Amino acid sequence: MEDVHYYLAVFKRRLPYFLIVSTLVSAIFVAVAFTMPPAYESRMVLLVEAPKIPEDLASSTVQTPAFEQLQLLQQRVFTRNNLLTIAREHNALPEMSGMSPDEIVGRMRDRTGIQTSNRFAQEVPLMTVSFEAPVAITTAAVLNAYLDLILQQDSEFRRGRSTETLEFFQQELERLGTEIDRQGARILQFKQDNTDALPESLDFRMDQQSDLQDQLAEIDREINGFRSQRSRLVQLYELTGGVDASTTPVQSAEERALEEAKTELQNALAIYAPDNPRVKLLETRIKNLEAAVDASDDVAEDTREPVLEEDLPPVLRVQLDEVDAGIDALEAQKERIQERIDALTTTIERTPEVAIVLEEMNRKYETIQDQYERAEERLSAAQIGDQIETRSRGQRITVIEQPTVPDRPTKPSRKKMAVAGTGLGMLAAIALIVLLEFFSNTARRPEDIIKRFGVTPISTIPYIQTKGQRIRRRARQILVLLLILGGIPAALYAIHIYYLPLDLIAEKVMDKLGIRL
Image 1 (cartoon, rainbow, N blue to C red):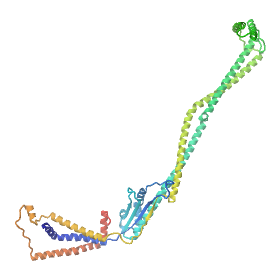
Image 2: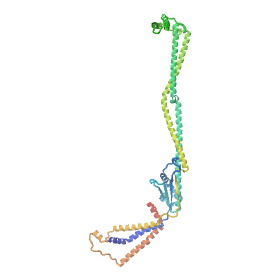
Image 3: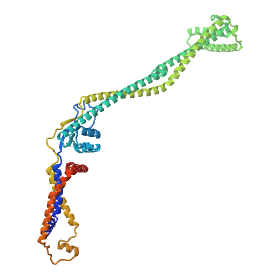
Image 4: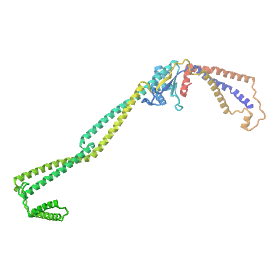
């Protein structure tokens, strides 16, 4: 209880400081509260509307999440140039002529409030935009300017995206079409350059090669026939001395005996069986005679002198020339056929290499063709998406709360400012008293003497003031009170009139502190 009386006595002793500080701070806040110009605030609410056409039927080419779209619009609309233009067009700030562009942009951003819904809470994508100005109609005008920019930027952004997408796929389709034509021309030129070695004609060329080889074998047989005929003609002449095949040559005894034996064998076979001893005997005799005839022919051949070409009769030479001409014609034909076979063989050997190159070219052509078909599908989707954006059937920004002109100021709350200023003044005064007592070395209680000197006083005698001291003390208190009640308001009035209005001072202070009341 004694501590309470002590603290009350200290407070009473420091009461002038309390009154000075609390009254000064309270007066400043009250003066500022009632001199600050009224502030009007208007707001608008925007909604990101879902596409009007279901995406499973047709989708727009501009696939931007709703919250990302709001952030993009915020960055594209509230730029330095836009804020400067709107502020100057609508005279949005007081005394704007004396401000620098940076100050204007800073004030506009301070007076503009932007709030979006929480994307993580799965809320509806909303954006609330507000603006504060000393004139009510200015708030609505600035917000309408913001709204026009937002809707314009949203439309330009989505139309620009869809148009760029459409133009990209159109250019891609043209590029792929040109590439297909070029690749097709390359394939055609390659086929024309390698017509004789294309893989699709390989079977035909192999069959043709086989037919030519058969023809070559047939020609060889014909040449051998002509050569045999020539040899027989010469042999016939050498044996008979004539050129007629019907001329009978002179037979030897062995040849006549051989013919007689063959005749007897034929007659015996008509009568007897093949295993008859007489038949067997005749067959043995025929074999022996044939051996003798062959031996005599060999001896005659060895002893026969060759016949010279010029010794041959003209008829035989004509026949031999005809045979030689046939042989030469067949040899020329054989040479031509062999050349064709060699050419076919060369093309057949080149066919695998040509097939590999052609397959690679065709594979590239098919790849480009697939890309072209996919580009056609995407171009079709891009055209549908562009039509959706052109007709405003896709995701877009809509206004669910239009900007209106406020009918009463929203700021400042003068009563709250006055009460807050009074309370702040009292707290500041109490804090000053606590600091003064904390740093004071004056001993006012026996406890202070004991704590400081370690001596316990016998008794305490209060300080008794005289009547004159009491009068002077009261006079000082009254004078201080009058100074507080009259001097502080007079000083604030002088500052407001002769230096700078208090509302501007308060506004500058709030701008420095970055707060809005």
